[in-house]
Amino acid sequence: MALARGDWYFVVCALVMGAFMSVPYVYAAQQDNYRVAEVWKSKRVRGAYLTDLVCILVFGGAWAGCWFLSSRIIWGFLISLFFTIAEVALYITDYAPKRKKPLRCTPRALRAITAGALVSAGAVTAALALVNGSGTDEYLRYPLFFGLSAVYPILFSCTLATINAGERLNNLRYERRTRRALLAERDLIRIGVTGSFGKTSVKRALAAMLSVRFNVLATPESYNTPMGIAKTVRELGAEHDVFIAEMGARRRGDISRLMRLVRPSHTILTGVNSQHLETFGTREAILREKLKVLDVSAEDGVAVVNDRLKDLPQIRERTAGNIMLAGGDARSRVHYSDVAVCEDGSAFTLWFYGTPVECVTRLLGEHNIEDITLAAAMAFRFGVSPEEIRDVIASLSPVPHRLQLIEGNGIRIIDDTFNSNPDGARRALETLGLFRGRRVVLTPGMVELGEDEPAENAALGRHIADVADVAMLVGGKRARAINCGLKERGFSGEVRFYRTLAEAQEDFAKVLRVGDVLLLLNDLPDHYED
Image (tube, rainbow, N blue to C red; front, side, top):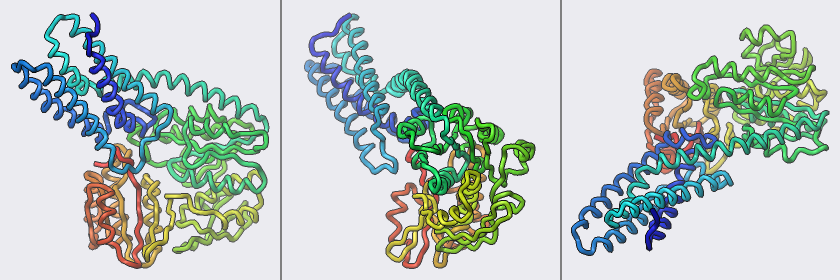
């Protein structure tokens, strides 16, 4: 078995097709840490594959129709060439529309795309060798392209699974290096922040408060995975006194892994709800995973916990130990009271072990006061005075895309597009209710809530009905669930439906008026649009 003269043409075409076909598959996998399952869940990948099948039928039919022609070899060459061009053009066209979150051309992504191209070329090369060795009519070589497109999802999935095995070994090497770097600084204060919501806000507030007394390094933006933390630790130096790590979890074992990586001496638990129920499986699994942050590494370590969780047996049994409750409960050692919220921010009283401090913040909504209180409890634990904490609170700026108020062209926009959980959505709508003017909500609903998803989106519809005048709903099944909630509440306002976010944005000129307040509530990744 060997390659025949001219077979390089088939190999080159397969290499080009494999590279272009890999892009949407890598993009889909990238949405969840390159998990192979994400490839099969992606609507865009399934749509691209259906298009491939149509192309196979069209060009395969043309190839079969030329079987009886004396010049069929030439026609076979042209059909395969045009099939390759059509496939490449279709994949380029599929990626042409603006993505909310474009493909990140990381080394890992480039490795996956390169591997997809090489495996495609290898598969076609092996098939050519078999065809040539069998002595059959060389016209049978041309349908190899059709077969490549038909089996490519399986080829890519196997390739990605193989690459992931190597990537996991490489990641473990980075994690060991990160662990050594953190433990090498013996006096370094390591603080972990986790919860179903509010992690980034609490982390930013805490970093600002501790910066009054310490040199602080915190994970940026929403870097809350092992690799995100490892990347941040590269910047860690002897000058740093405190390292704050945001710790995210989508599956069982995620918090355990991050606790082993960071080994925090102190932790903050912002709260627990059904966010990521789809990937965790059960509420009990979510709770068990989040509560693992209570096991801090230092003997004098403290776990600051939102007092909304005070009735949980695991919390109640340990409040006399290393758990410190904070939040809106007057019985908590650090708590807030006398809240006055408005369109421009909030005023409240912050209590430190019975000592009150009057505070003001530009941040919108009472939930931000709750986040501030959790951060203040930890900062006070490290000697930052109530007065210093008060001054920091006054200077805090909104976290981008988390109830961020934007003024423009006579319309106020509340950007809460990063929110994607029931508690956050409810709080955002409570904030919207503080504003004067016609209130408009644009939302595609919430995802990854497992069996709770229809009920939670219906509840979202009821909350929207309580405060809004116009509901702009994006998508299919989630939008219908929200609309059911609107109807249950007897919503008398205007309801508009859109297939995509882009379609809704094009309608802004017709819907919005000067003086309106627009809440952008949640912005689903591309692979969740239906």
